[in-house]
Image (cartoon, rainbow, N blue to C red; front, side, top):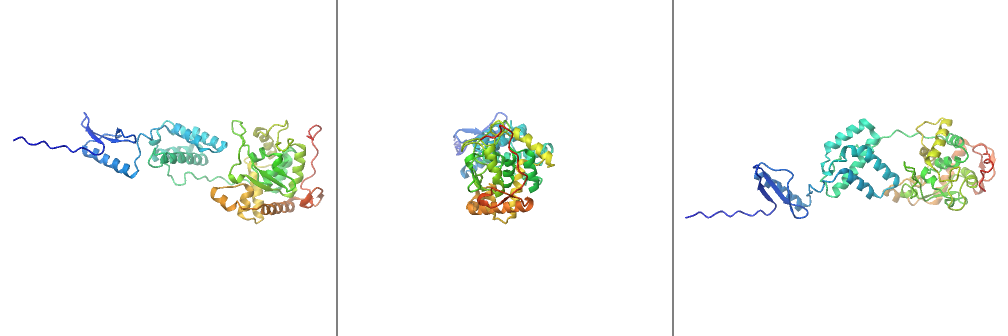
Length: 403
């Protein structure tokens, strides 16, 4: 009597077949439901079965990552990542430069899912030698952010960037100008740009905020400046008008009384006409350009003897230190300087105009104590007697006065 054939049990998940080479190939249902082959073949059928069991378990837990999903070139994915961030123009420019110079040469033609922790470590070691710690830290933070988005997009299982401290920067302490050096810089740079130096230091204004300051942003009755916009200049020379650097960048700054004479004088002599007129313009009336101002700034630094690495942006440290020395509360200091994080904003957003006025008056008194002579100057208005900080300025040459 013939023996009955044993019925083969049908596999419930995936499929296994033996190839002509004798090895076994495992296939599993992908995200689209069609069977796709495992990335490697197996010597035994049992090994293929173990692989399918792992895939099935991962899919049931929601931990499964389609190996083919991450087969997207890093360069294309990173460029799309930058375009989708919605960051400020200057930040996007920085990201593209870091990508082009420091990430693409190593990872540009690799698939996203092929970037391993070992490759990241090797790349970082090479960058530290080639470009130094600061640029490497910036590049690493960008790479880590891009790869973290790839995790969220289910392209990779986990971020390959997990080197402790690799994204931290330890920059040298920035130089801080004294009150006397600030006024020396204001004198050396010339009468047209004098107020720009004073506001950069004693009002803690950023250069891009000064570049877009308008007539209507200044209220001489209250002695204040409203920062509403900024106009950073990209490396391409493009002037990008938009919001300030952070949400707290939109702020009202109460001015120390000694600056008000310079403000009135500058508005009369140099600013564009009308409420929308720019406060700081070039000699031909065009918007402020970094190249033009940069040359004058470098000459002024040399004349005063300031370090070469001293930036216009560093003037803010002088004002911030003076404000801190008044004993003001942290939230008032943050508002004045326009510093912000999402968490910190909730803490210091309730700083009042009264607090800001007191802070500005305290700076005013401190600067007078450090620098001012006893000779009174008329025109102090509601802010009391204004003492002369520097010798009186001459009027512009014939034809330079705007009104």
